[in-house]
Length: 129
Image 1 (cartoon, rainbow, N blue to C red):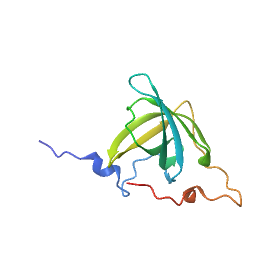
Image 2 (cartoon, rainbow, N blue to C red):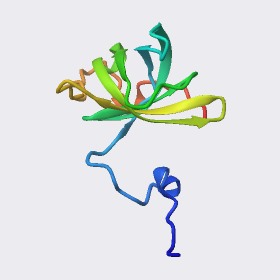
Image 3 (cartoon, rainbow, N blue to C red):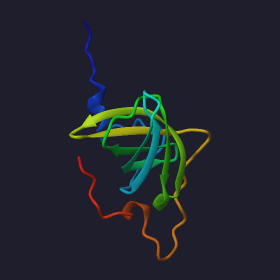
């Protein structure tokens, strides 16, 4: 049998550029709303990990069903809209969720004003593993 490549090894690799856009590290609160499998509305405050024009990676306290849709709001990075869950992986006691923006939504870095803090430094809070 041929060699099998474990793609999970590459998921965290800084050496492999598989993304269409560069991601910007940012740690800000993100309000997330979704409907669970039983049809109940759910809400959580997530922590963003990184973002690009087409999507965002967040850390949440519970799993989100893959291919489901969520509503997002993060005022500190001028983000509001919907996204589909592309991946959800348990990491420690939390879940790392990859979201792809939907409905033509694209994130644009807000224009910095003199008193504004750059997006990369929007929060001095560390992101828990």
